[in-house]
Length: 184
Image (cartoon, rainbow, N blue to C red; front, side, top):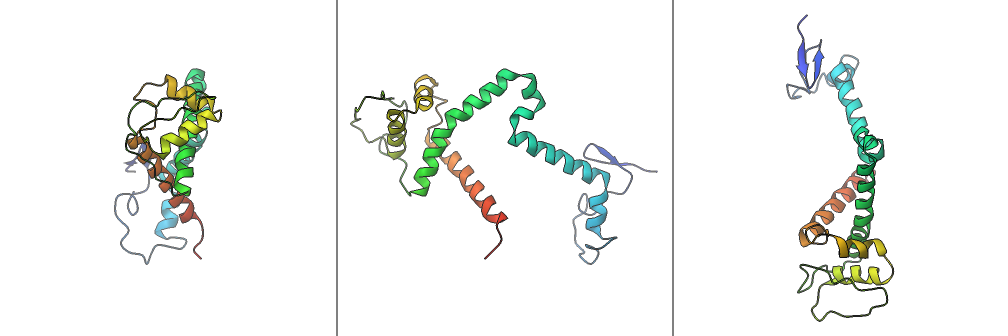
């Protein structure tokens, strides 16, 4: 019997429609001997589905990923990074929901982190995003304050580029949620 390689698996059946050839004829799509049924029962399809499920499981719970189990320090770093990002992401989501503009005239570079008791005001308008971050720090968000004080200027995650990336990610998440809901 001739074997054909699909992905990393050898197939005893011919990998045709939905793998190598595009689906052009829909008359044999459904049913017991339909293209979808045949494809779904192939070993390479079942393997691909299992790998996809494992990928999503690892993605959603990084503590279950083998390399993270082997390296507790790596897992700890991932969790710390998420704690640092959460107030920034939360601020971006809140500003988006409230339709608040993000940027001001001088919103690049180092953020002057105020102390909790400080009411110091910057002369330049740094923009709403930075103002809200500073307010969170004054309100007691120690993780955010420590992050902005200690992080390298290239790793604060508050640049315009990072803001836009997070906004794009939020947009993709909103679309995926909307696409899962039934149409009205």
